[in-house]
Amino acid sequence: MESQRSFMLIALALVSFLLWQEWQTAYGPKAVTPVEQTEQKASLTEAKFVASNVPSDLAQTGTNTNSVQNTAADVPANMANEPTVPVVRNQLGQSERFVEVTTDTLQVTIDLLGGDVVKANLIKYPITEGSNDAYSLLRPNAAALYVAQSGLIGANGPDANPDGRPLYTSPIMQYTLNNDSLSVPLSWVGSNGMRITKTFVFTRGNHAVELQQTITNGSNDTIIVQPYAQLKQTFTLPEGNMFMPTYRGAAYGTEQEQYQKYSFGDIEDESLRIATPAGWIAMIEHYFLSAWVPPQDKTNTIYTRAIGTEYATIGYTSEPVSIVSGAETRLDSLLYLGPKDQDTLKQYAKGLNLTVDYGFLWFISEWLFWLLQMIQGVVVNWGVAIIIITIIVKGIMYPLTKKQYESMAKMRVLGPKMTQLKERFGDDRQKMSQAMMELYKKEKVNPMGGCFPLLLQMPIFLALYWVFLESVELRHADFVFWITDLSTKDPYFVLPILTGISMWALQKLQPMTVTDEMQKKIMQFMPIMMTIFFMWFPSGLVLYWLISNVITLVQAKLIYASMEKRGLKAS
Image (cartoon, rainbow, N blue to C red; front, top):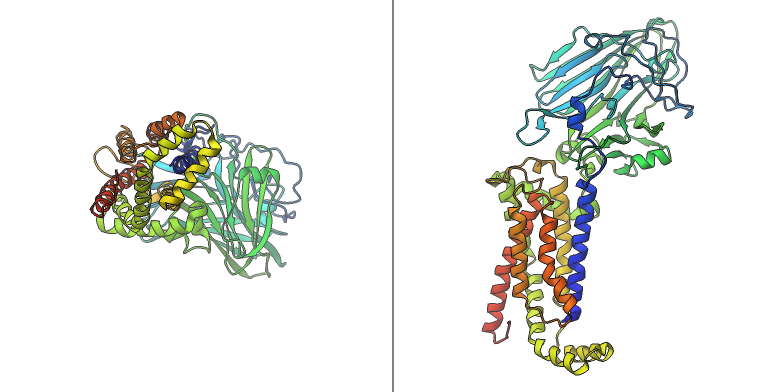
C-alpha cells in the first residue's frame, strides 16, 4: 500500500507541477505591459514609429524619387549595419498621413508612407469582459511597436529606394464598410512613369484583408519588382502587467513543416531563411495572431531578422516579376488580423490552424475541442458544455476508474496485515519490502492496480487543460452567476474551494493505511495545495476538475456497494 500511495503521490505531484509550470508560462508574472493599455498611450507620430522599414537582402538601388526621405532600416539584405531610424513626424501631419478604415470586425489604420497597416483593433473582442474598448492587435506605439508591412523591392521596387519608401495618396482619409466588401486604394507614381496601386480589400464578417498590388509600367524599359511582406514587433514590453500570453513570438509554415515556432530568442540568435512553395508567416499571442499568407502557387522565401536589440521581424519575399514597357500586372497576398479560429485559419493556408497550439497532446485536444464545440452548439453555454463533456469523459474512463477503486479496496483489506508487518520488522526496510511483496503475491493483489488507471487518465486532463487555455471561443465565455469568463480565474474562488473539498472527500473515501508520518502529512496537505493552485487557474478548468471529482465520488460509492454485494469488503 505504501508503494501504491507513493506512486499516486508522485503522479499527482507531476500533474500539479506540469500545470503550474504551464500556468506560469501562460500567465505568470512577467515584465510586460498589456497591449490594450500601451496602445491607448500610443502616438502615431512618435519618432521610433518607423513603418518605413522594409526588407532588403534582395533589394537593389532604384531610380524613383517620389518618396519621403528616410532610411530603409528593416531591409533583409546583406545584414548590413543598422541605419539610424529616421524621424518622420515633421514631414506630414497625422491627418494627411493615416487612412482610417472601419468594418464590422476591424478598425484599421494604414500609413500612406509605405502603405503599411500600423494599427488594428478587433471590434468583436473587447479588452476585458464588459469593456467598450476593442482589443488592439497591431499598434504604432514606440514602446510596444507591432505593425504589418508590405511592398515591392527588387531592381525597380520603390521600397528598396535608399532615398525612402513611396508616399502613397488616397482619395479619402476615412472609409467605412457599408456593403459586403470595401476597397481602399492607395496610389503612387514614380518619376520614371511606373504606377503602383496598393488596394486593401475588406469583407464583412471577416478578419482577413486581401492586398492587391497593381503595377503599371509606364517607363520605356522592362522593370523588375519583388513583393515582400513582414510583421515587425518589439522584443520586450515595459513592466506593468502580471499576465502574459501562452506564447508571444513568431511562427511560420512551409511545405515540409506545417507549423514551426521561432521565438524572439531564436531570432536574436540566428536569422532564418527558408525557400518553400506556398507557406505563411505569423506573429502569435494568446488567443490572437497576425499572419501574412503569400501566393500559394509561388515559391516564397521566409526570413527573420533582429533589428538591433529592439525589434524582431518575420516575413517573406516572393518570386521576382518582370513587367515589360506598357504592361500591367497584379500581385496578391492576404493579411489575417484576428482570433486563432481553427476553422477559419485552415481555409487560408495549410497548417495555419495549428497556431492554436495544443502542445504534445494536440491529437487528443483537437478531438476534445471538436466534441466540446458540438455540445456547446446544442446547449449554447460553454460551462454546461464543460460539465457534459466531463460526464462523457468520465463515462468512457469508468472501466479504468472501476479497476482503480477495486484495487484500492483490496489494498485496504490488507491494512491490518501491513500494520503487523510494520510492527514486526520495525525500521528494517529491506525485510519490510520483501515481506510486503510476499503478502501481495499471496493475496493476489497488484500494488500498482490503483495507480496505473490514474496515470492513464492524466493525458485527458492535460489535453483538456490546453483546450481551455488555447481556445479563443472560451475567452469571455459566460457560465452562471459570478462566472462570466471561463478563461480566467474564479473571482471569488468558490470553484477552487469546492474542488479542494471534493478532493478531501475523495481522500476520506480512501482511508490512509500508510504508517510513514511524513507521507501521511503530505497526502493530507495535498487538497490544500491543489486548492491554492486552482485559485489561479482558468475557471473552466477548475469546473472540469470539480465535476470530475463529484462524478468520481459517485462512481466510487457505486463500485464499493457492488463489491459488498459480491461479498468483498471495500471499507
